[in-house]
Length: 431
Image 1 (cartoon, rainbow, N blue to C red):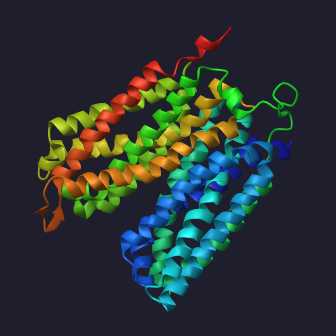
Image 2 (image 1 turned 135 degrees about the horizontal axis):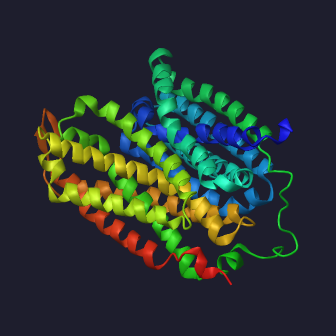
Image 3 (image 1 turned 30 degrees about the horizontal axis):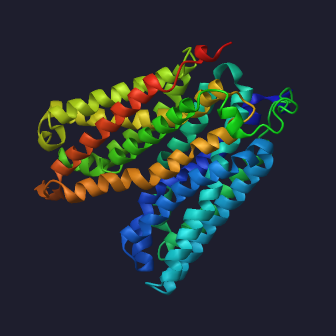
């Protein structure tokens, strides 16, 4: 039956939802414009994005049970909250333009972009994942990778469109853009909400798991197993954000300021490619945790090479070191993306499909906390270590960026050890 087509009922709605909410990562394109328009510093407005990621993770953690019970309710909540949050952000930007320096506009943006949109992000991120795994039972990794790649690729797709809107809407274009996009994304997400449907052959566990809490399900395996998965996920995001947040300045350090835009696009492709490639690859493996071991080993290897060669400090004019630094940026982006797409399938392998939305939601709390720690950790290291110098008329801190790597390599090693010794292969739980 056409109505039961897995692409129409799962893949397309997942892409409609994830390609909409993934535009949260476009913040850097217009954050300076917002700051200038409402009369605040860029640093003050940046908290809106941090709050959005924090509430994404926390809403997923607390609303996972809602998603578990009713994907139609959760996907509708996602569409309404995301669109209302975006429209509200546009309104408070407009208000800030009329009243420059008003704290009301800044708090309004925090609430709308951070809290309200954050709820839409969390529920929208979770809603299609279980449905995809049910429809694509034999290729769960490919299916979830496709959707999560849509989340990662959203920035690359939407960035030029947003930039064109800012360039052509004229005075007040920044708030007009938000109001227009609120309508566009609501239509996309509402269409996804209408199409999204679990297979009619799937029946939610009733008798055996009714009354069984999420914690009871997690306890079916050693609790250290779940803690290990949570910590691996948290560390991978923290290290990814630490490097990605400094990516533009690192590129300038190695003398490629003119190609920063191109490199940013390529790294976004690696990010999306890692989400799809690593998860599809995991479908061929007996233990999906093997993918995390590969991600951490690759990250440790490239980070170590750039550390030993002082690639960021010495890269300007040295082709080999430039290649190594770019390799590090691309590998970390791919591993960062792959970490996201493999979490739901790894959890489903370990804990079954009955409570997967709730357990996946709880695990996304790692994203919430990493969203507040990854960037800030790297910024603190750059601000408090090394010395600023001028390379090609651009003020940078090569030693500071190098020092970030000393912290991330230790964290990657810890994550690898957790992957090896805490997260045990599935065969160990068979009776």
